[in-house]
Every structure is written in C-alpha cells, then in structure tokens.
Image 1 (cartoon, rainbow, N blue to C red):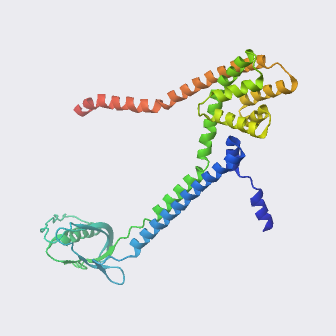
Image 2: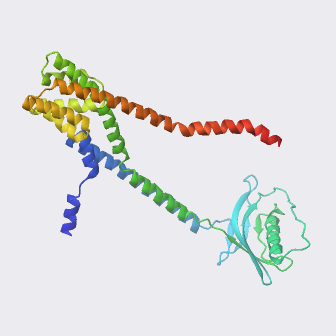
Length: 353
C-alpha cells in the first residue's frame, strides 16, 4: 500500500509540467490547478446530469398512469378519455391477437380523442383472400380505430374479445431510454477525458506561433542597437521595454527582465531559461549566441545578422504554409457551393423529364 501511494506521489503531473514550461513554475502551478478544477467541475456536472436523467427515466418506467387501468399482469383494461379541450392523447401499446393457432403481435400508437370530439368511421373493406395473420392484423387495426367510435364516453374499455372470437391482449409499451442515456453519458465522459489537454495544446501552439512571429523583429532591433554602439544588456532591456504589445513572447521577456532585476541575476541567463522552457530551437540559438558573447567574447553582431535573415526567411515560409492550409480548408465549402449551383442549374431540366 505504501509503495502504491509513493508511486502516485512520484507520478509526473503532465498538465502542471506543460503549464510550467509555458509560464514558469509559479504561474504554471496556478494555471494547471485552475484547468484541473474546471475539468473536475465539468465531470461533476456531467455526473449530476446523468443521475437526473436516469432518475427521470426510471420514474417514468416504474410509475403507473392514473388514467390507464391495468390488471396485475399489466394488461390494459380501460383508459380515461381526456376531457373536452385537453386534446387527444396517444399511448404506445403492444397488442396481441389470438385466433385458433394464429398469434399476431403488433406495436401500435393508440390515439384517444377528447370527449365530444365526434364519431369516426374508418372501417376498411375486407380482402377476399386473406391469410390468418393478415386477418388478425386487420382486426387489430379495426380494434384500434374503434377506440374513438364513441367520444362521449368518459372511460374507454379496450375490447378483450372481438365478435368473431379473436382474443386481444393490450399492454402499455414502455420506452426504455436508459441505454441511450448511458451511451450519451459514456460519449460525453470520453469527450471530456480526451479533451482534458485541449486548452494547454491551444496555448502551446499559440505560444510557439507568437515566438516564431515576434523573434525576427526582436533580433533585428537588437542588431540595430548593437550596431549603434549599445552594449548587449542595455540593448535587450531597451528592446523588451519599448514593446507594449501584449503577446506571449514579450510577456515572457518582460517577466524574465523583472526576475533579473528582482534577483540581481544576469538577463541573458533568464532568457536562456525561457528559451529552454519554450523548446523553440531558433530562440535557443539566439540566447546561446548571446551567452557565448558574454562569456567568451565571440562575434555577436555578425551571428545575429545571419540568424535574423534565417528567421525572416522561416517566418515567410511559415506564412506561406498557413496560406496553403487556409486554401485547403476552403476546399470543402467551395465544393458544397458548386454542388448547390449545379443542382439549381440542372433541377429544372430534370423536372421536365
């Protein structure tokens, strides 16, 4: 037991680790806890909805309607006709007709008109040559229609035996919706479980897109300041501070700058930590070049110029890929639109054939 508990404690929290990779340890823990709490709330609400649906189905299944009289075996004896103005009522019934050795069972929808709705006469002609099951089926239909022959009666007594000796057994058909409710619950639960990482996936993709989009401009500005005679630390501080746009990339850069000021740690180390957390290779190369320059005095401006040109080319390529992807997504709507236009064009010709 102790080993199992220790194993649970040592099991890595993937959600927390992914949030910490995006936003750092402190903010990542808070966001992971908030995301997990939201998922738990959805699961609890789903369980409550499932319990309510099951209770509703079971109450409808086991409850007996006061206006439908049945015997101990569940056979319907009589039905109370709705009062005038209440409208007709429909009841799903199972009818078994027995005549000699022939037995026919049919599911029917029994319509009981309101009181004073008027007599109906929908009698059908009898076929000259009918098999015994066909005769029983026709007699069932006749018995169903006979329910509304006298709409003035308050109580409708369902016939248990016809004039020709056919025995009829009427039973109320209970629709069991429990399997559908359970299936819906299982599908919804699976959807919640499979989508538990959907939010962090979107944020990871948005963060990667932000770095890819903003990094070329960041590098270019840094190069311009270095060429103007500004030292690297001052250049980084100016580039980060001059940008007010609330993007993921610059939010993380400002957070790194704030940590550097509060802890008195080198700014390039904080940027290196952010680059490793992000996992973006281009950003890691930039921070490594800056760290090498500070520690070894390597050529910084030339390397950053080369990286800047590569980043702008990669950004252009990424934009082209997004454009092609957008064109692909538009293919299906265009196909549907063309199909509608073709149908509208050829429909008059088809109608004249």
